[in-house]
Length: 109
Length: 226
Image (cartoon, rainbow over all chains, first blue to last red):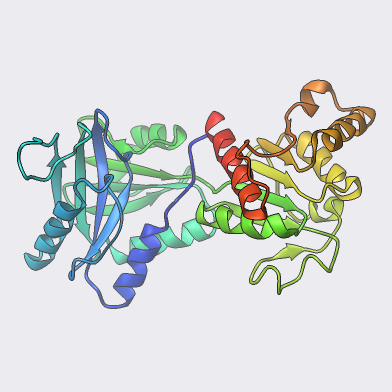
């Protein structure tokens, strides 16, 4: 049996939309190596940068928020982004754990 | 994702249905897939692969395509027998883990709205209550009264229906007596050994929230063993 420990993020997304916020769903669609969260993990972001849920252990959330605000501003319906292993000597966003993830961003419309 | 689809997903989750969301990553259009129900032309040619993901409860992108499949399974049902102090804490943990919960207690002074606000409690003996609750191997039982009159019929029902988790509160001595009664009722040792008694993993705590935590931890661990 797989877990059914759902986090009710989609329910929250719906409430945000009903409160007249623009909402982007960010979903982990692929993982390679020791990625922190499994495929299907999700966070939601609104135009103000408020977010809920997660796609990693806190490694890439700030970049995801930036990208989500970006697609709302540019009025793009969706975007796919990938995160790879971070270079520890550089001040950059990446997965400290050494995994790779692909995150799919899509606006609720 | 269209708002209409989002709303449909939420309704299906509320109704405890099993389904999958399929998304075309090139257009971000999504729809709901259900077993034995027709799927739109856009996804028809991927039907077999979607079925494979669905049956294996997998999430992921279908190989060499731009189709993402995300499956939703029915929440696990947890039946708590005994609207006692520990149950009040158990319910909070169980809710945050998205278990579907039912509480049974024939003793009216325990099963009150004031003690369990907003919670549906079956104020009946287990034999009667189980007539109203659908149970199967995706159900768990937590017996908390340590009163044989109340716990035993519930444990017998859970063993017969092959619940995937059965736990009973009580000391080693209480549990030994319980096993003896179940043997006399015709259950085999293998069946009786399926009962987690004394219930919970060893944390050392004795307070109600600590015991509730040790029970819920054992329940989650058993869920992943299946």
